[in-house]
Image (tube, rainbow, N blue to C red; front, side, top):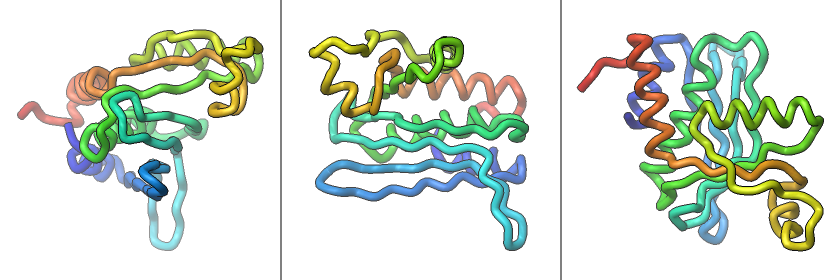
Length: 169
């Protein structure tokens, strides 16, 4: 599944996918949004932000926001587009993210959600001196997780196929 195919799925749901990328010294800073565009108005239903480094493990996901009441499949479109874009346009094969410790209950929900997407536990980032660099990068403590972009994309493709949003090749 590629970004163009995902855009066709979004079109069928009256949604659009926008990918914004800024490159600075080999670092690609990106934002992917799923929105509804109608005449002169835009309603952003979800977005993900992050950056990539030119390495296999270079996809770093920083901010994910999905509005309550968003149309069905906004989350799947954001995740699938992120993984497809990384595989198509970067050297990245694996993604990392940090489920921040905002509040104990919410952090556990995030970890459960990210596991459902296909991420696995790496380590708890806390107050130890060895975690200082990771805390500076991610802006806090939390659960560091890693996901295989191809596997996550395949899992989402199977879900979208099951929902009859895409047709087998």
